[in-house]
Amino acid sequence: MILLFLASITLLTIIYYIINVALWLTLDCDVELFIKSKFGKKLSSLSGKVVWITGASSGIGQSLAHVLAANGAKLVLTARRVPELEKVKEQCLAISGGKLKENDVLTMQMDMVEIDRHEEYFQRVVKHFGTFDILVNNAGRSQRAAWQDIDLTVDRALFDLDVFSAVNLSR
Image 1 (cartoon, rainbow, N blue to C red):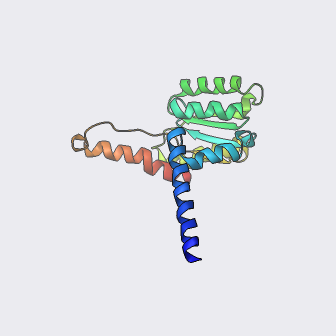
Image 2: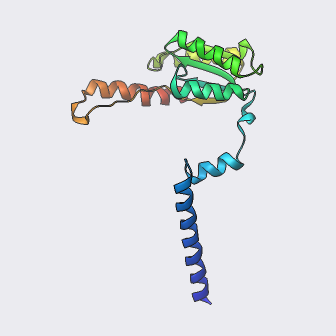
Image 3: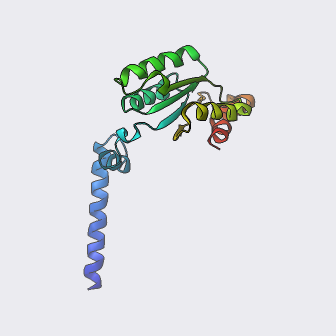
């Protein structure tokens, strides 16, 4: 009886790993993300929610803003570059297909490392929308150099932006 139980457990474990390897070879994401993308909440469930995206003027932040706008999420777009933020806002309004109005997308010039002003930015968002639901800390910088050649001031600046400012704004 115990031998049959152990054989069953072994067989199930082998099948589990075979399925995981097969999925790993065929998917472009991990298994959990694949399952959630198929059976989890749809992006349309964010319609009407207020989503604040830092670093929204280009790259991942801009693309995320486009996807959220298409699904009717109200947006707070922040970055240092105002002209690019305004372009993203106009793109979001167009992509939304009428789901968003001018007042549903707030743009604010914001430098994440100005930690003393985070409360001010937060109050502006709450004053405009009454609340907000999701914060996406996307603003950041990367470093591409040989580790031993990087000056400590560069490391400090990187940590100030990528770690400390994100932690402070999240609080």
